[in-house]
Length: 222
Image (cartoon, rainbow, N blue to C red):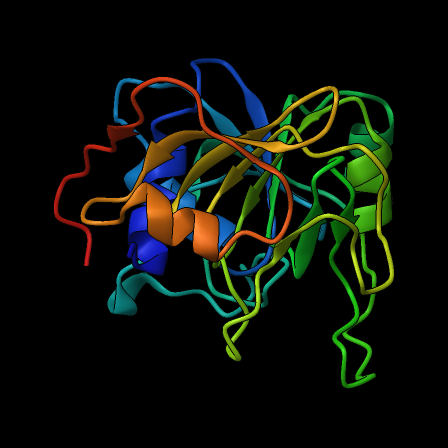
């Protein structure tokens, strides 16, 4: 199974030159570390930064520069700072090409549960409502199963829903999936060493497997 860093690395290979991208809390915040150097991409944060770079070295950390996860970050040349109202205007106005979020559950119709865990502890819906309702493509980065072993890829979400029919692609520690227009998770790639049978056993929602499923290629990201 993939580590969080390897999931982030795999998603980074999907990013295209010239895109404006929102990176959510958790695994998505690691993606900037694995972006190919030749790409010119602008990462946006809802707390008011356009132009996020990789995580800084310890001797270059600035406590005033943080992302939505409250982690210290770096800024690339040409970055700009502004208030969160301006950041959300960019999201609502359709100026972000791709949003990459974590999730607690995803349904086979592309619904996402993102903000409240089953114990009742409210994490806070945050800016996710705006992001999932925007025109941007939505990719999900998450572990395939909860800590108790139950699947996060479901027929129907069991937790409060953040957005309906909004997810296009899902990247987990077991593989890469697209959400089909008619419903269902289409398996596109499997993680190194992970069998199709294991993915089937750990996917509660409808899994569609067609043709040969290639094993994804990764460089060494522990």
